[in-house]
Image 1: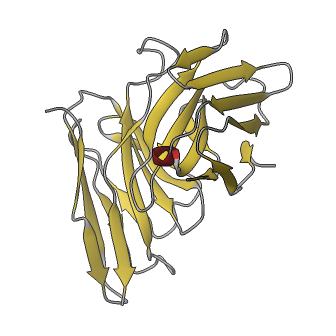
Image 2 (image 1 turned 30 degrees about the vertical axis):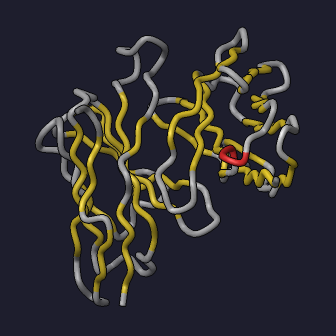
Length: 108
Length: 118
């Protein structure tokens, strides 16, 4: 079983829409959680860390649900520039584990 | 200007050759990592190092080798034993577990090296 699983998408949404991604993880002892954004042929860049209490950064909200072992990312008022692949990641026992990414296409 | 640099950006290799990918960081991070990403795939861990002169195999270490002689540097050699080396190689660094603000600081990535075998 993979440590981290994500729906690969693509999610095709119009500008201004709200879109949410989930990411499930298998190890309940996982310690820290993150969302990264990766543009085509570029390196992943940190979007936000995910805290137990949930956190918000502008149009982006991240949540952690330890009971059900998933993290989520909500994007409000989608912009064309939000089109990218979103990777969830977690840290567990000296290693980071990454999901394979969810592709988002925001259309005019 | 702090960050992680990787060179070269593009690398072409003939079959049977060894090549070395460079990774340097000036973030004063203890831990460094090498990943491989294939088209449409996630990141797979090749090797990681928590401290100078020590490193561990990741999930796909066969055909690769590393060294960690300096804190700032973690070069990756792709050997001729690696059967399918064409991929996007990403280097990353973070603070050592237990020494950062949370269990671990966030992992930051270099810009990557695209390796193509001719």
